Image (tube, rainbow, N blue to C red; front, side, top):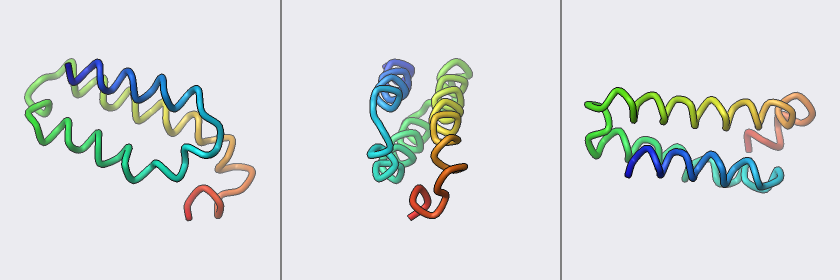
Amino acid sequence: MASLRAFLLTSFICTMDMGFARLLPRIVDSLASLLESGADREPDIIEQIFTSWSHVMMYLQKYLIENPSEVLK
């Protein structure tokens, strides 16, 4: 279930435009919640969480390069 949540989160982010940047705090909270709910003892889920976060950062990269102050507000 937790790995599905991480996958769905990543899929959701990839379909959005820059508007998703305002959701970053909730995304971070969601990934942290997965870890706190026991995912920290499951290597496969930890891998999915870090893969999801990596995808978020890769997607944000183009916006960070163009307008970092807007993304980091």
